[in-house]
Image (tube, rainbow, N blue to C red; front, side):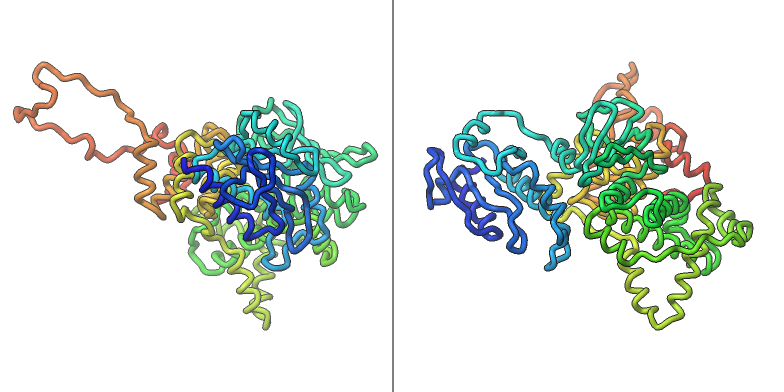
Amino acid sequence: MREIENIASELFDKIRTRFEGVTLGDETAKATADPEKARYFNFDYEINGEKYGNITLSLIDETGLKIYFSKDMVDRLQSSEDTMDADDGDDKEQQWYDFLRSLRKFAKRNQLTFDTRDITKSNLDIRDIKQHSKDNSILTKSDLSVTESKLHGTSRSSYRECGPVRVIIRHSDNIDEEKHGARTRNIESVFVETHLGERFLLPEKNLHYASAMARHISEGGRIEDELGESITAMCQEMNHMRHFVRGVRNREFEDQETNDMAQAATQHYNQLKSQLKHIGGRRGYGSYKETYLPESNIENDVDIAALRERFVKKIYDDRFDNALPYVERAYRRQKECMETPMADEFSNWANEVTEGTWEEPKDEQDINDLDILMSNPLEVGIDGDNAISTLQGIIGDDDLNDALAILSRESPEKESADARPEIIAYLNKTNPELAAKYNTDYQQPTAPEQPATPNQTVGATTTDEPTADLGQQPAQPTESADPLEFIKLLAGLRSRK
């Protein structure tokens, strides 16, 4: 570990470039102007001149970086009238978590432990910091992720506050707090509860939908009013289209019109998913309410048989039936847009929502973080959410996310399946050298070493009979070798190269 004086000086340079009025204190609680002697740093966390709470960073025990902040800071960030930073468009809550993530990387780079603690006091004095520095309980990475999710509760119930409204999640199995994202799994039912004690069972179990409905009710709406029904219809439409979009993604069909229909459906599904997520925030809900227009009912005269024929030849899934009317409508809208002067604007919008890669391991710190993740089994979670959120900040790729979601549903282990093979398969395409490294570390020998026979001596060779090089034999695909690939083969889907 580097000398603590150099770390303190570097930490001061890191925070003073963003925050003003940073006060320093040495280990005896006296104010100091020398950053190398500083062991705690105190400043107000602000965005665009607006203060959201006081922050104290501590290096008192010289082996860890500890961060103290008020319990209600995140609530203040969420309830801010302008939740988006006008300069760069980032969500203020997300900026806060990005700030914590940057401090965590700073601590790891300097071989320090990292500890975040939310406290009831609005500020700390040096006596408080000394007392906290004697506490050796350090939050792990998974603990920090659970804090960010804002879910809390008992062994069979989880809760999330949304102003005066509360989301209640009932689980079908006990929650293991040691597992990352455990409160998003085994969901049996979801309720919203008002401040008057009224409790409503939601027709869908999607947590983004639950947050959006809770926001709607907290703003004075009701589940059965026009806006509430439109939010429910949005979630139901997503559920109908999910299997279709995942089934046709990255596949080529015999005619261009079918390809265009699949593309239109994928773009529409991504737009619905993003919109439903943003309705859960105050700003996103306000924007949706202002621009809401009643949606025309889905047409009953859609020729399901004709549409079915387009997709049945290669990959058709009976679950596509519910999505086909929405696919038809999305395709018609796309055609209408492309035939107007707004076509260029529509094309730009489509490019923005088209899938791609937005994050890759780009420096030594990212690779070190990935090394840690790949050293132990990584549960994929419901729809791949656990693995996707854990990889956030290191790898962001839609194809990988899709593969993780499929793994969570089609593997024998379901949500507890290990995500590392999918990550290695992705890295084989983008970073073969890194994939080879993890492949060597992750795969274990499948057959025990054979003892030497009387005609063989360990370390010696014989020319009596030719021996086959077993390492050169191609592996024969079997069900036990790779269950996911075996299922794809049975379903008629092309294997991922």
